[in-house]
Image (cartoon, rainbow over all chains, first blue to last red; front, side, top):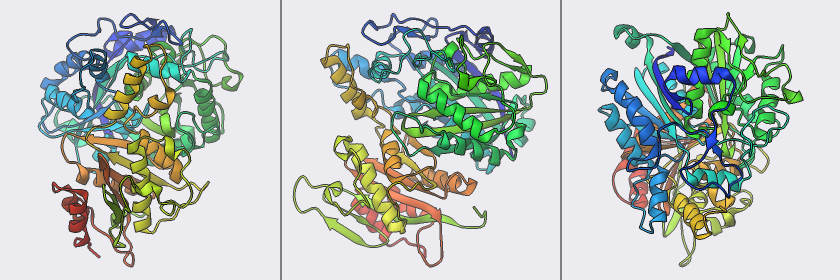
Length: 373
Length: 223
């Protein structure tokens, strides 16, 4: 039994809605701007991909992103839906404020508190779960949701994902020298790092039976998923791509397809030298025939961390629906290793039926999702 | 893996403020004095944990509980050998203490330079990732948080990962403060003994200390 995506929505630096993001990604241009929420002058980069209209205030940044999205969804959401929340740092701006104001942190930034808020906003009856697997968090959550539906344990799962541009995150990535001062350019010969982005979104997964019963549209199916660990290093990926290749192999196996079925790959593509090189090695290891069209949207909407995989899944759905492989955003000078795989331009793919989306993160976590039109 | 195999809990390790042990093997080691911890026992791990001294407390605890859960299940590991084992973890606070430590240090340093070695622990999955690296786990690694006790759901998630072929076994860690329980979830074999998922989750979910849970678990083995 496949998990069917019956509804989705996102908020990204291109604005609110799936089409805003899709159209922005298709331009191949970055939606980066100078950070003004806090001083980023000392950081490796002052650029970030920020959602218009979101600013520090009484409400946390991620709740500013989630409340409009979930508010619109709630009336159509079955009360027995299981909520899986994917995030890395959630409402960490609450902790920032407490530290900066010199008062004790009262636990308001705990992920369990955010989970409660999200469930209440959705109006669901049961307890939800938070899933955090670094920058593959929302892929892991989608995998969990799809597995629960395939096993028959659940027939409606809402995966919600979010992370925001905060001083906490920018300071951290800057300390690791992981930011590209000029903006992320994944798979570019001159790439130097990532650009932090913020985003939020959801996908509502249902069993086929329930979707049919409720007259829900079928946007695409999540047919395969694979999760793996590198067991290698906390901040650097396995150099040979072995861990990601294992995740892809599991995803293909659970989908019941061969590598030849995959028509396009939405890569993690952070723009860091090591990540992108590792991904290409993994792709070459699995896809031994002609190069498969690969793209990254992080040169457009930045690295949205816990939300990245979910937004990329939604873009994969759009790609299948439109028969178009998006450009690898902000790509100017293709890395020789990526020649034939990535392109700075959109590519027509009228027969595109099955696509892959991959993610990796701190600690060597890897995830791959197979999506079928 | 075969869809017919019964997946259950094949080993349980535990750590609290006074002792640590393995439930199936019925072993308990009481600390010799104050300031002791299981990771100070050179015999706990098959080989030294690289950078253990630099880990934060939750990460050291995760490594120790994982070692005990593997030991109780009779699963061996060796340096440089990777295995298809996954790791799931849960606690009440995520990485709140690590977040606070990182940002407080950054602010006290003048809000210009942050410490990367503190930043890498500001993910709920970081202690799990360090643990997976030490033990050579190549299976799924993720943190799963709940509003309330979710150990049963966590064990079922682990069993699902084994059933799907995402891993051959999954270690589940549940910790709070300086106490932790670790469960090895794998296909049950008749000779090995173990717990069904329910008979492991129910006693451990009752409010109380880890030692209380261990006492209840000792009488709940199914085979």
